[in-house]
Figure (cartoon, rainbow, N blue to C red):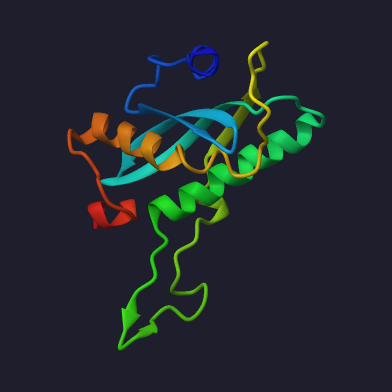
Amino acid sequence: RRVLETLREKSDWGNAPEGRFQGVAVMESYGSVCAEVAEVSLVDGRPKVHKVTAVVDCGEVVNPDIVQAQLMGAVVYGLSAAMGEKLELTGGAIRQSNFHDYPLLRMPDAPEVVGFTVRGPDSPTGGIGEVAVPPLAPAVCNALFLATGERIRSLPIREHFA
């Protein structure tokens, strides 16, 4: 609850700029709790993630800069996987041979990432690791549902907007 309440405040939930939609997701993993709000729009009929606000309760934080770096990296990694990464098999072999035909997220497509930590008397003894990866795709898909009225139930997301 503490994570979600902080996320509501820090993400300005419910006050997205005109033409943008906010989706939220929360996950408990690795002994930590992480929640995210993804702010998404449709640009030329394709999804664009503008901002992701993440709040994590990962227990005792010794180095806040490492937590911020982990949140940013996990969001970019999760967004890359959710939006476009896909391996295809042809004749039992992987068709993609290198980065030219395997669509990783590029810097111009990376959203602003804002991260926060919270800790209470009952906080778990968790860690930071990849805790911000699992809620990213559901948060983006929830925002896209608000934008389109259609639920996305498979990844990568780009295939739903071809």
